[in-house]
Length: 377
Image 1 (tube, one colour):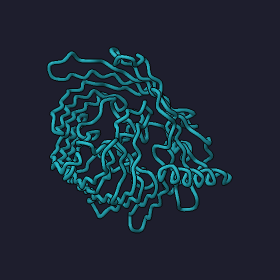
Image 2 (image 1 turned 45 degrees about the horizontal axis):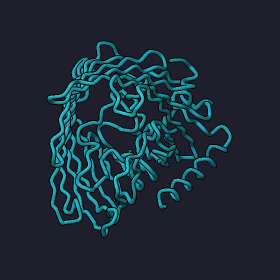
Image 3 (image 1 turned 135 degrees about the vertical axis):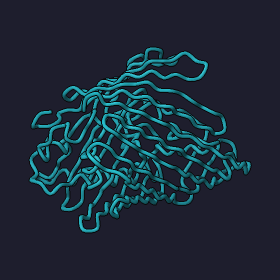
Image 4 (image 1 turned 30 degrees about the vertical axis):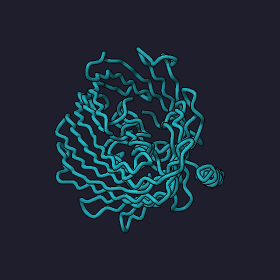
């Protein structure tokens, strides 16, 4: 009920912002007459300038131009060997929106539903960037500042390591957006993110049929988190940065036919990222502790992460290799081989996933954004 009321309130505020004449700007490339390649390496993955643009609240001290009112990102997924009862081709789409109200910027990522899933607001927040203090504030429904954004569906179709892991009856993964307040600030080469969350969204960024779990969950105490990113090297040819994260909260769990209980949980993460020439290497490792994961005071530990290597033969195409693993307490591992290329507004991605002692399975996706940049690609 809380999520529905909060979604309705922010959606109404967003709709009012869209009514302001010449202020509704859902496509950032249209606003500043950018080409897609200025912000994206392979749509929708961001390059260095794209990350700078996002970290500044999608605002730049440049003349602004007229835009379309709405934008659609459409994705068609293909599974060579789909699970029983699932189709081989699965369409999915999202509605993207953006509006400026003075110094406030609103952003909407609305899932149109796919695979039997309902339509819903996946991201819905208002933000403000303070140039003097180099600070960004967001309030609403936002993603945690993970190194890899689940909502942007950046470079593959397979979940990243520990991001989607559940621990016992705690069904709140790192990949789920949160309702609350996020504050970011830059101190020279150090970037600090903090969040305070009071609720979460449980669903997929492109839709998907909900899976009944037999329990109801809610944040019985706000989740607090801190994320650090420090840049050691940053040149046109190479870069090196490291990071650390910590978050914790209390999740209320009400299993069917049982009394509710509270799970006090903590998560800690380490990040390393390096690039040299056409190569990009990134790795994360996460550790978690749940002090009551099942309602019987079971103290459960979990861990997981990934190592990813990408090669860019040209600026708008790459080949990737990634190893994923997590334990909660059962061990899950896979190796993902994939590649992607951007041609005008289209992104084509293909991947093969190999799990231990199992046959590999192949999947692919075609993604397109429209109407896109008014000044070409």
